[in-house]
Length: 273
Image 1 (cartoon, rainbow, N blue to C red):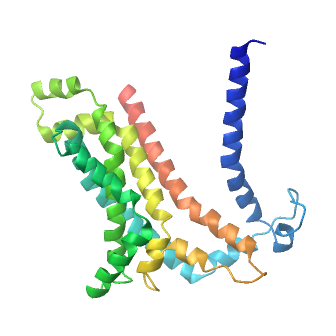
Image 2: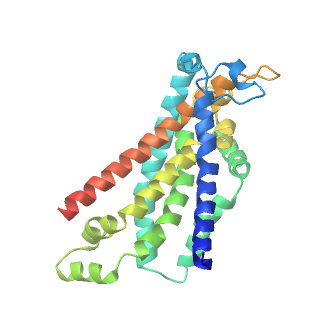
Image 3: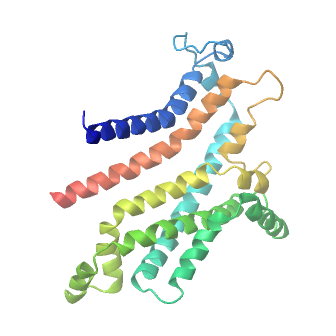
């Protein structure tokens, strides 16, 4: 066997190991969501067991879960929408009209992600308390928009920079204005990367825990906060309920990414036909 073949086999083995490391925790969590507590805490891991839906029934039977789900959908959806509406034009302008401040702007936007959540949450908590907006969806939407806006701009600038300038120049010769070029030329060409940026921004704010924990108490609690409250201290930790809450918490982002992927595939099919 040649050295090249050995290298390929080693590369495939590393990829398989990495894929297994990423997939197995999610698979084990989903499996434990259908187990009784006695089947989870057993010293020997069980792959064959009698499944139960009691864990899901307990989670879905709590009104706080639906309240948290509604708050998460409203705050995350609004923040991503606002972040995309403001961030995509800003990223296009930064990519297409660079100046001496362009790199500084990109670094400043990226630096917002360097800050630990507590460094953002404490000043904002004081601000919302003074404005009497603490524990409201509006305060969470504005706070989350800071995260989504930074993420969308950061990931979209390279996507717009890869759009061929010749295509835009040809459209300009055909009489397209700057807005038409942005909406009809740049956005469709960079749509694959842009959809990935929007999806990443949604997952980022959907799973946000510390900021939501510090900016809410009861009325605007999001689903991650509600899910964390399902646990109990001590030895009797309801592992099945916790795993079921994790599974339910993961469904909306997966649906969101699936819808975006379906829209992207249908758009490319229409374009190719």
